[in-house]
Amino acid sequence: MVDRSLDASGLHCPMPLLKTKLELNTMAPGEELEVIATDAGSARDIPAFLKLSPHTLMSSSETAGQYRFVIKCGG
Image (cartoon, rainbow, N blue to C red):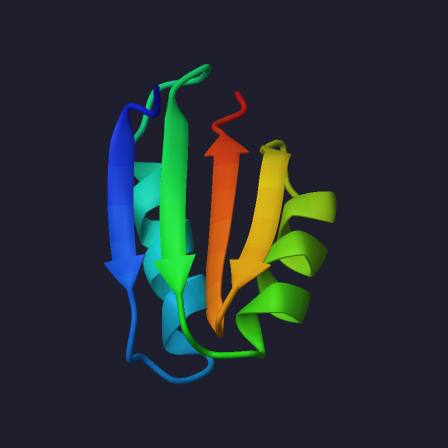
């Protein structure tokens, strides 16, 4: 189970990524955040950001134009 959920459906680039960053900034290390987005750019932007951050992408999937990411907050 994730600790928090962020629904960024309907938001366009770069808002899903910005909202993800803001949410992660309020979380404790080890907590998990689920992000739901419908913007195709999120499939590229969120993993790219996470590679440069202390956070870990635990899983990502795409179903019928909906992108789901589970991110573990890093320290």
